[in-house]
Length: 113
Length: 112
Image 1 (cartoon, chains in turn orange, green):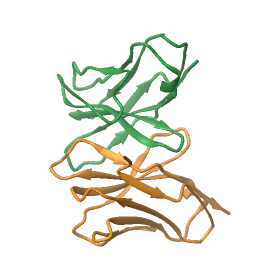
Image 2: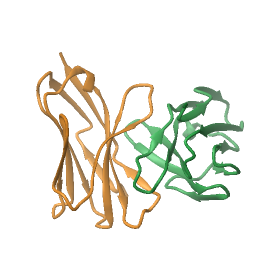
Image 3: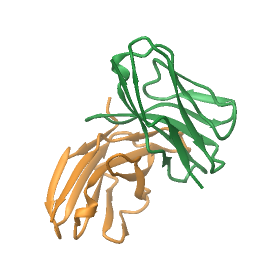
Image 4: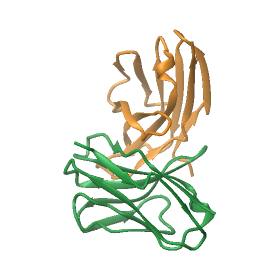
C-alpha cells in the first residue's frame, strides 16, 4: 500500500502566490520527513526536512508544517517564482535509521509569470 | 568533485537483453541505493547497500540484481529486460543516517 499519500498531482499558481502541497502518512514509526525538489532532466535534491518534535520549519520562502496527531505534513512556498516550477516529492523514513526512504507520488508545480 | 555519476544517460534495450547501469560516487558514502521513477508513481526503492559487501532489497527488487564490491560503485543489473522495466533510474547515496540523499541525474531506459 502507498505509505505516503501526496496531493495534488499538479498545481498551477501565479507568480507571487502561495503554493501548498500536502502529504499524509499512516506509519507512526516515521520520524523524518524530507521534501525533495526535482527539475526536468535532473535528480531530486533535498529542499527542506522536519522531524516530528517540531510543528513548523522555515527556510527562506519554504516552510514545512507538521501535524503529528493528524499524521499530515505540508510544504508551503511563499511568494512563488517561475524558478520554483519543478516536481516536489514528500518522503518519510522510520525510526532507528531505517535505510528505506519512502516517497510520495510527486506534485508538478507550475508558477506562471 | 563529481558527486554521484550515472552512466549511461540513455539506453534502449530489446526484451530479453541484459545490461548494467553504472553508479559511481566520490563522496566516500557508505549508503548507496537505486530508485526507479515512473509517471504518477513517485520514486520506488529497488535495492540498497549500507557498505561494501552488504546489499538488501527495497520495495521493487524483482528483475534486478546488485552487488557492492567497493565503496565507490554500486551497479544495477537487468538480467533479462522487460517492457515493464522502462523507467528512469536514479542512484542515490548518503553519508550518515541523518544526512540527505544525494541523487545522480538518472538513466532513462526504454525496453522495446
